[in-house]
Amino acid sequence: MTEDHISSGVELASEAASQALNNQEYQRVYYKHLKEDIVSGFNGGGKLEVFLMVAYLPLSMFVHQVTIAFLRKRFSSFNKLRVSTSLLATILNFNLDFWLTLPPLVISVSLTLEQNLQLFFGLLLFGISQIVLSCMIDQSPIVRPFWVANERKAYNVIANKKIIHLIKGEKKGEEKEKPENVIINIQFITNQRALLLVATVVSILAVDFPLIFPRRLCKTEEFGISLMDVGVGSVMFSSGLTQRKIRDLVLSKEVQSTIMKDLLALFKGSFFIFLLAFGRFILHREIDYHSHVTEWGVHWNFYATIYVVNLALVLLQNYLKWSLPIALTLMVAYEFAIVKYGLREYVFYGPRSGWVSANREGIVSSVGYLAVCLVGIEFGRSIYRYIYEESPNQSEEELEMTQRDREVRLFNKMIGLCMMFWGAFFLSEDVFDKSSRRLCNMAYVIWMVCLNLTDLLLFYFTDRIMPRYETNLVIEAINYNQLFYFFFSSLMTGLVNLLVWTLYEDAIPSYGYMFIYLYGVALIVVVLKALRLRIKI
Image (spheres, rainbow, N blue to C red):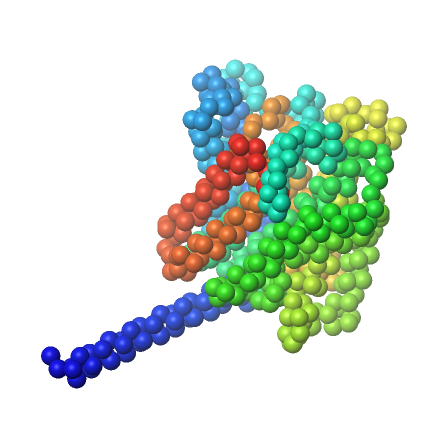
């Protein structure tokens, strides 16, 4: 073979390799744009469909509780399994809790409204049938009527066991005497928070599998109602329910704190959140990860909104007892700016010429998310005052009430508030703009309050009809490391998207990836809970 032939062959091979690389680069760029287009430009679906999917959260809890209670009652060996702390028992209990609780949340997102109604009422009837069967077999129901006093309190007081600080890398043992390490755990609130996180974690990956996640459930572009729009608003509402200031007011009559002290604590405690926000942006740029710019803006993200809302709450800490009037005043002024001063047009159609303009969605919507959190604080204070019997800030009438009287009064109050806010929501869409997640306007704020308050009412009812709370290892583990669970889930979502071309996957493999992802993340937090390691980030 001559040198000319060799040279010609090398050139042909080089040209073929270059062509292949160019083709791969073209496919990569094309796929990236396709990923962005497939989650953009949608106007959502129906209110009933979204409400039904959110209602699966307390329904899953109900089915888990009555199923475990029924099996414990019927089989003594199963009762021994649930109380055992051996490794094998823990593995079996984890799998049972996982497969009883999470599958409906995954399957429901791929169904039509009619199919979801059938599945919802089918699961409800399954739970009720176990209650009826229990009564028929031994005349001893596994639930009790709501109006009958429940010996089990709705709360318990616990203390942090062991904390790992990722920044300092230090460990702290038990310090029960310190107020900041004491937690008043109201079970139905912690259950709601955990399952809301699970639903959010399900959605952030499922949206990348178009054959199991309808596009009507994607984030809305301007106005509309969708499942993906519920996540951040619900997190903000539940964050308000469990704010540290509410706990402090319940535990002591006076809260000695200064704004500067709390600002310092915020900066120290939220430093990792800032790193997450900044690191997420840098990582997305470095690996050229697909990004939906109109969700938050160019540089902004969910973690940045958490930081801004927490900062605002510190500045408002001395006025949080008026959280509801502050939220109302804030939203009226904000809505006025949206409608009368062109804020709507600026957010939707403005240029991205500077840093503020480039991140206008995240910056502007922080006002609405702050209002959602403030409303959550108001409801949280009411719930703690009724539930926690040892709260010093009670009237003489409240001190004389029995536990059952408190619970019934709280239940009636929540029903009244649900009716009031649902009426306000339908009225707001006639008076103001339609609900907009991108603006986080008045209608969206009220929509978030309606959904979460109704959801909380259902969780409350489920909790109080159960004479015994059946432990759910998955929910307990998520509550133990909530922010880490969401952070790790986000990392795994990115990893799946980097390794799998999700848009081209069929339905069966898509479900397989979803359950492997959810199972793996849940297993990690269960192991951390078993080791009593709370990762504070």
